[in-house]
Length: 264
Image (cartoon, rainbow, N blue to C red; front, side, top):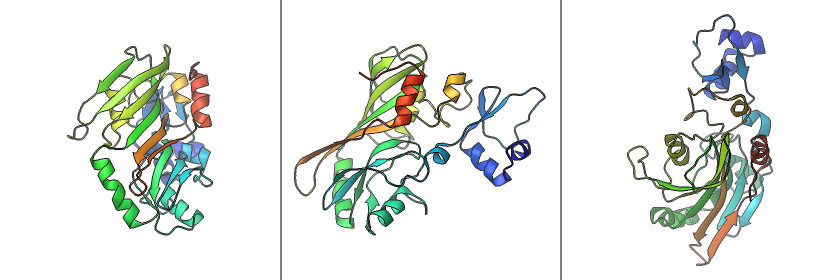
């Protein structure tokens, strides 16, 4: 920590934040321990966080809106809710909607479709849809290596709970694969854990790919390449089926290009 603080002209607190984000590599391996021992000749790399690159997420696009719900295109680098600078609180101010609440969550670095309710009644009306698995959720993910099985269903429990993830390979080569992922259950970090369990962790994942020796190309990935591409649900108040998609973000497309992949 002291070495990085001096080299980067940063505070110990700032360096701790960088380590916690798992944005430090020593000899091509990700490290996050403040007391990691360095030796002469060690090669140290530090990545900018997606938060530093993408800011607070202001100006996010509205993908769908009516009297009860809004589906927003969440940028990376901002948590969904629970902190003073969360996406939820930013949107409450920007949309002048003090009762706005996130119906579900996306990880800080995950982009795409995120549903918000404008009032408590609308929020409560969504709960049975999740409980009865009436929500359609589809993601795009880029993972390390070539996933050779074109379709698979992963059912390993997550945190002791039943979890189901359906995976389809869209394009792949020896370095990376781009996947379409559908989930029947919404456990915390379900997609990331399930894909890591196959030996193909999500590119840029600081947690579930930790400790692996990363190729130089992998270390250039600024965030976990996971995008909530589509949500669908029967509207609790109108009865109509709502289906909303979010455009593929620029950094995801740049990552595809980096590995020579192209969405069909």
